[in-house]
Image (cartoon, rainbow, N blue to C red; front, side):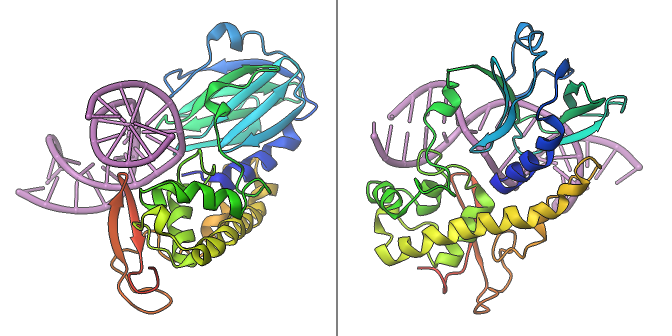
Length: 269
DNA sequence: AACGTGCCCTGAACGC
DNA sequence: TGCGTTCAGGGCACGT
């Protein structure tokens, strides 16, 4: 599933193919994604592409009159292909460019989205998001304040988009392990030293993942859907019942907010 | 405001 | 072999 690093790597991968190109046609197939743009909006998008940016896990294709917003959901991925490449199953939308290439969104499980926001407006889905994890707005003061007033599990608060965006299930598990914090610990009970450790752990892990994902960039127009950062060793995610890589204790597994949660009962407290 | 739960979707993995 | 069931997960919507 695309987490923030994969979305950022996708952004970096597609940007060179899109920026300063003219969008000449939008081909829509499957409209039953989580959210979808009205056809009359899609019909008016033949405009130059100014840039491709990212907010949380949303990609923004910026046009003079507004932004096309893409969300990859759980199973979505983007490819830049020759315009005559036949569509396959789950290819939901193509943005055809004047270069003879196209940007194609494929999303098996259809948790993704295609949205539009007019220039000068902020789509409601983007309006109340927390800070970007790699920005200075995500700092110890902010993290401390957010945790101080929440009684629910630390992992759930970390995954709350109002607290910080882009920390999905995998990274929440990994970051809490590296910071030595029990995922089920009430957020307000997490100690100042633990928070001080958690903050850089999140930033460093995400930054490293983006950097590793960069290795797939030059092959982006190929059919390579594998995110480079998955090559990194996951310490706990998907390893329930196996020994902790630090101390050898069997990793515990439980569900928080209907998400799989793995932790070391000895290393995390 | 904060918290818990349901829901959307497909395909792989599993159980009988 | 071939069913049925379970699981994975982002994030909104809703009820309490």
